[in-house]
Image (cartoon, rainbow, N blue to C red):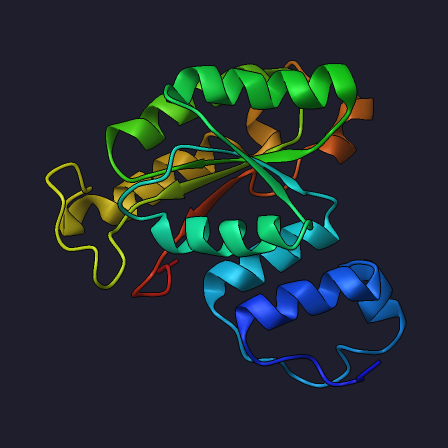
Length: 199
């Protein structure tokens, strides 16, 4: 097998499946050199390294690029995605998947009210020390066009502060000390397509 990582996303996904997955490819030294890919693909690969192969999603403005990556990686048999219709329900399903079955997943939403609904639903996980990932779109990606539900540009920083502060383990005052290692920092990830987050 070739030691070089393919350059196209679809070829790379199929190649990773043939290698036995991302961990096997890394263990065999296949990612020794820098690989160029989109932020969304890097996010999926990073989550795969954390054991995340299940995605609960409501795709739309702000998350279509991630949806395309997940489609390609699902076709290759590396991840699985379930489409939902209600963000609160989806957040609770993700919490239950982790709490009952011990499987870590990522909850993905589009921009606007849906992200805030998912964040409200995520409080059950946060208050009980249940670790899972929330990925909220907050700005439309290039080519999607403006959306009336998009968080206005001046308020995007505030939106990021709310979502990141609500899910820090230090904010969960009632969780058990043994559960602290299960909560990731930050549990609420923000996909930004145009600008880096200011601190």
